[in-house]
Amino acid sequence: MNKLSLDVLMRKVDNRYSLVVITAKRARFITETEESGKVANNNNGNKPVTMALQDIANDRVKFLHTRQGRK
Image 1 (cartoon, one colour):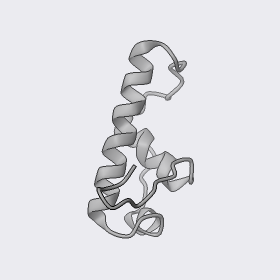
Image 2 (image 1 turned 120 degrees about the vertical axis):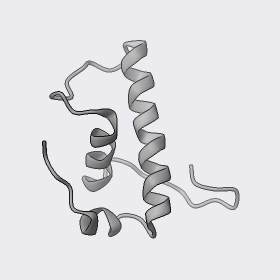
Image 3 (image 1 turned 60 degrees about the vertical axis):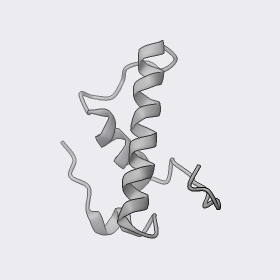
Image 4 (image 1 turned 45 degrees about the horizontal axis):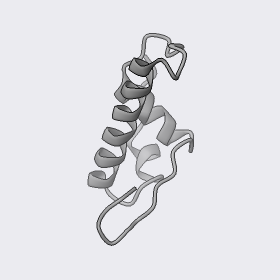
């Protein structure tokens, strides 16, 4: 498993709470798309949370700050 540095991830978001929320939403999306068959299962044995963190570290996830929260 590839260990991601918290320092690298924190450069992508403004605080740890945001990192947790964004990671959870991305992991849920990955799980839902895999179950529905929309995405081929090529995750190399990684769990959805690990895949979500890798997506954040590699700038494959974008998010918006809104008044009500993040989207």
